[in-house]
Length: 121
Image (cartoon, rainbow, N blue to C red):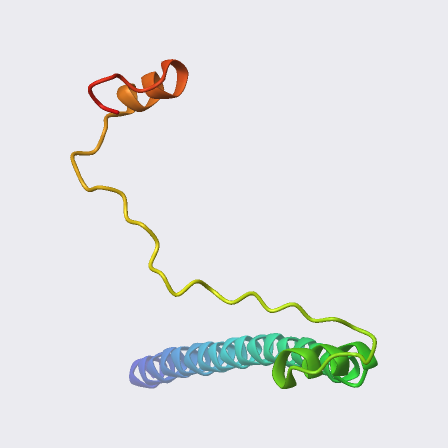
């Protein structure tokens, strides 16, 4: 009888460990699935926001204001009673400052309040 009790105890301990293993594995799988669901919900929310933004963009692109803006910018069109002024940049290069040693901040402030010194002018 002693041997049977030891065998039953060993089998009982083994079954107990096996049950803990199964419960732990199931809990871990459930945890992983919950995390995956949470990530997918965030992804769905992001896609819904993107979809909403794209729908708003499509509605804006259908407006006359957008068509007029695009015609002006891309095609260079204007309204019949409108005058267009084009500013052409000068072909002359801008005059470069004489390169020399950089003035210190103190000298810059002095020049601002009291004017440049005679030897610097």
